[in-house]
Structures are given as structure tokens and as C-alpha cells.
Image 1 (cartoon, rainbow, N blue to C red):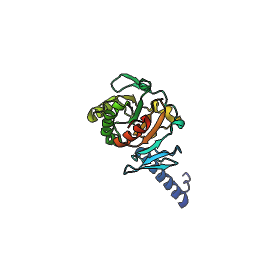
Image 2: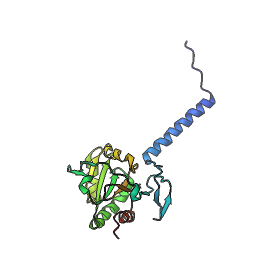
Image 3: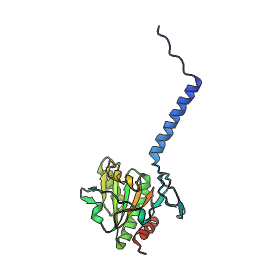
Image 4: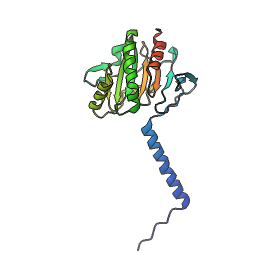
Length: 216
């Protein structure tokens, strides 16, 4: 008969159980959303729409945290280009000289469904002020669910189909869209002026684009 392996001590069992519990919590947090503590500063929007100024921005899924950059500190947005959900080619460069609202979303994302009506309404209202909207659809394995999302919410602007998130990698040196949904405001010079992590409201979009365009 072979010798039996020694039983782990009570302390070792406790440490193992704690490790499993920690992994479970991390897994749930990863499904709920991403987190950011990038030290870029900026204004955070509270649940009542008020703005606060903190040296650090933090993100909890769906919080709508806002970060703004003064003109002298803005960095150039990367070259974003690709095929849209209906197969056309579009790029951020197509909107050169205009303020662009760039929204990162997925059809599977509940906060994305929450913000979609406000985004659609804001895109129509702000176009007269020279503001264009562009979407980046991510983590949808096929185009069909995303196309259904666009039809359901009447989204009037194009979205680049980016299932693997390749389009987002270039933003690492600026204000990365590190949650889904995320919304970036790009100024007329092609620089990242503001970021919202989590769902965004029409009011916030109007405030941010007004600040960037200077139009009232």
C-alpha cells in the first residue's frame, strides 16, 4: 500500500479558501466593469448632476465619472479607422476640424442600453453646432446584435465594428476608454478633451461639448 499524503494544516486550508474567495470576487468585479485611477484629475459628476473637482478620478461601473483636460494638456487621439456595422469605411480623420463625441459600447451592455436614447438625442441636437458622433462597437462576436441595437434605439451615427478592442489600444497614452460604456470628446484639433466612464446623459454631453466648442 502507498503512503498517504499528509493532510494540510488548518492554517493552510484557511489560506486556500481565502485565495479561492478572492479569485471569485475579482472575477465578479471583472464582469461588472473596469476601474480607473489614472491621476489625470478633472471633474466628476455626482448622481444629482453636480460637478466636483478631484485630483484623481475613480470609476465604478455605471458611475458616469467625468475627466476633463485643459487645452494645454490634451494629447492627440490615435488614428481610429475601420469598417462600420454596415460595412462602410469610416475614420476619425473624416471629421477633422470638428468636435467629435466618440462612444464605446456593446449590445450586451446594460449601461449602454440606458444611455443610448440620450446619445441619439444629443447627436441630433448638437449637429447644428458642428459636433459629430462616432461609435466603436466592441466585444460583440457578430454584427447582428449590434445592428439590432442600432435599430432599436434609432442611433443615427455610424459605429466601427471592433470586436477585439483593437481600436481602443491607441488611447493608452491619452484618456483611455477603460470601461464599457465610455465616451470621449475630441476637440477640433483632434485631441482628447474629455472622458466619461460609465453611462452618459444628454445633459453631460451638452455641457462637455459646449465647453470644448465654446458655443452657447
